[in-house]
Image (cartoon, rainbow, N blue to C red):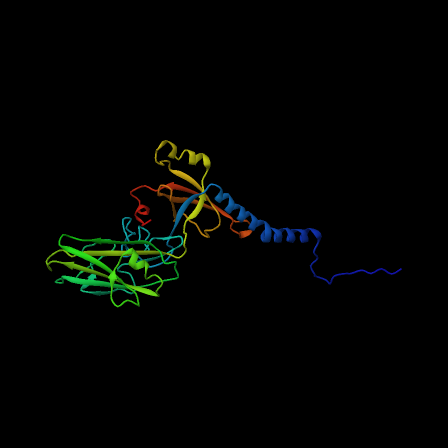
Length: 311
């Protein structure tokens, strides 16, 4: 009696049962198990969370005026906070704009970058013989939720001098004072124009100096992140006996909301406004799919540049 048989062509691959099983396991892991692990990580963080803000070191951008090819970034610089890149740190869920001498849209009247003072970053100052001058810059606005997160300026005002800051949107007939409320009302425009006026009583007086204007606004409503820390260490956090946190290291467990974390970044614990510089960042990413982060951080000291970044 004849039998039927199949012989694959020479060189054709042959798949056995173990290979089929391996491929199925990999597919099940990627499509089903790992997403469940990520979801469980979120629930674990939600269990007893602490709320934090995340500040990521700016990877690229405008080179700060506080250093050149022969120097290092100035650790006391209020424009880059020692990073060498204007702005220094991006806060999660916000957009940052810094107006300084490196801003591409700056237009000045009776004002020039003051190179003679050797201050860092290089500030704007009145030209010789001028009593009044202005600095103007256009800030392009991105998609946002209409909330100002931070607004500040770094400047020097000798006796007998003054400075005023103004803002104007495309629909405004004239400038209005640059306040948090006035800026917030204009965030849904494609751009705003910022003007800073400098005065001095006489041309012989020392000039007022404008170093930078720092503007940050939210692009998501709630930019807080949830983290979990070891319960034993939290109990030693000393809130119960009224002593401030003083230990040098702390572990943080986060879900996969953040896609990149490095040792250039830091966290701010909202409870107590404590700042933590990340020392090690371990990503948990089976099969290349991020599920959570294990971070080890140290307490930031008062003298460090991280403390001067607007919260």
